Amino acid sequence: MSSSQDSLKKVQMYDSYIKKSLRFFARQCFKKKKKLLEREVCFSELPLKTLATLACYDSYFEDDYAFDVLGTRVKFSKTELFKALSMLSQQKREVIILSVGLGLKDTEVAERLNLTKENARFHRLTALEILREFMGVLPDEEK
Image 1 (tube, rainbow, N blue to C red):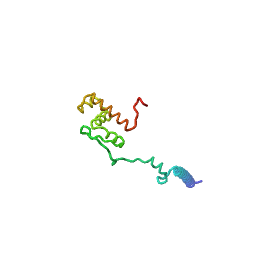
Image 2 (cartoon, rainbow, N blue to C red):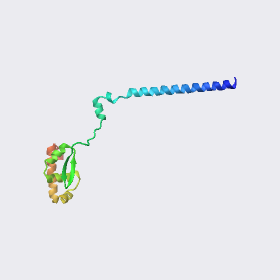
Image 3 (cartoon, rainbow, N blue to C red):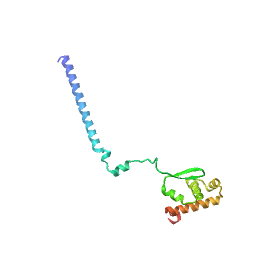
Image 4 (cartoon, helix red, strand yellow):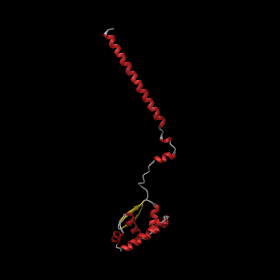
């Protein structure tokens, strides 16, 4: 064999190798695509129940309910809680929002609302009792 035939044979072997490699790669790609198509589902084909679990709804323009407490507007997004708090007197509402909502102690609430510590405690306890009755929650002892 001459050197030109030798080099031609090498080129043909290389060409054959590249074609085989490309065919193998193409088959792998088609297999992967087929597998994905079997698993994938268009959103339009999903049942509404499944689609609802995937959805996330923002509440930017939802109505908020608010009370003024010491010149600060305190907002509530839960209608039931707002209704329960609106049943309370202004003073009881301020005491319960400051003590439960902001986590202030009775002495701190009393200082801010110009009450005695005992008065703040009394308003907090009676407000909690009214809220429990309205929302149907049993006290800890009755559970």
